[in-house]
Amino acid sequence: MSSFQKRKQVPLPPGTMVSIQSKQPVTSSGIPSLDHILGGGLNIGSVLLVEEDKFNVYSKVLAKYFLAEGIFSQHKTLLASLDDDPQDMYKKVPSPSEEQITKDTPQNPDDMRIAWRYNNLPQVNSEQNSQTIGHNFDLTKPIQQSVLDEHGGLSWDGNDKHEQPTTMFSNPQFESLLHEIAQVISQSQKMQLSDESEPVPCVRICLTSFGSPLWFDNDFEGDFIKFLTVLKAIVRSMFGVCMITAPMHLLQLLSETFPAQIRNLVDYSVQLEAFAGSDKETNPIFKEYHGLLNINKISALNTLNAFTPETTDLAFKLRRRKFVIEKLHLPPELQESEEHNAPSLPCGDPKKHLLEF
Image (cartoon, rainbow, N blue to C red; front, side, top):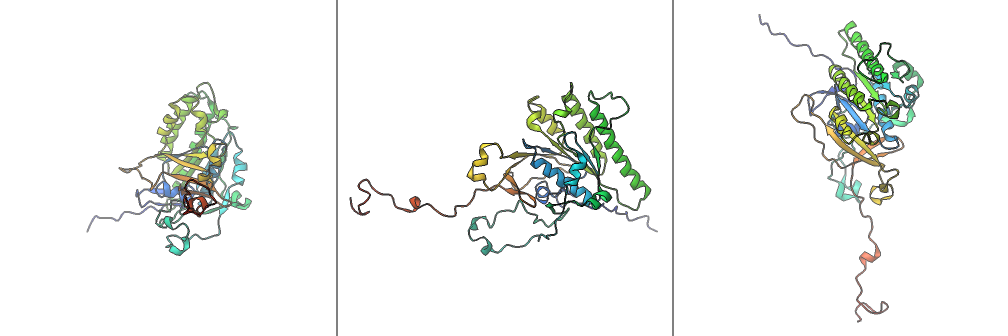
């Protein structure tokens, strides 16, 4: 009798799948175009850093997408913030869109008669990926209160401080937040142990405006680096992902090397460079976009090579219903000026015929 036994395949929780590129379990960030850029989604056990725009407008949109994906995928979700009310932010989370987006639909060349030169360019903004994961959300449809009551996430606003005195941080808020994260992970592990037939629940941690002036203390830089080091180790050991939005334009004022130290402690780092308040806002080249998306880091998790996106020239725009990331390109010339079409005139009287001298 053979001693070979077929290994049982552990089912993945909802909202996760095995990536084609890395063969690792991934989950959606809530934005299909961002998932496409990062290689199909966020690897389980990874930390995503979103470097906020100066007015903190578009980074909040990304956080809402991240939370919405967690709620509608029935993930264990935790939102922590000292600047915003987490409960109020949960109420502004969008709902899934009713529109069904067709994947991998071949385009007819007649559909792009004017911009014919772009027919063969890759669709970076596409939700046109054969590998589908997550939801498509509509920003005009806020989440229903009944759904929020049933599948709503947990929150931390800094009011419930840890009872034990902190010895690692000079600011007790960092200790309190780590204690809250540990409790969420412990609860998810107990849920899985109570019913082994169920898949391991996925955990989502979202820290918004982390490192804002409300976090400042005597040893802020040391506390910040210690917290990220411990947080990364915690996320690595759990089945889940973490998103952090941080005002890097303020943190870089503390030290020139501080932003580089922060990026070294995360797995993904993307920067939102909004055009509002800058010279690019009135530049006709960028009239169709609201800002640039700069990729500062993509790590290789459990693989030899990190995923390389098709292009790093990316821009984003916030439409009425959704947030889209596209490949940055110059607008096509739709018509030429009369001066360009007219032949150049020689010196002399402009009223004379062109052949007269």
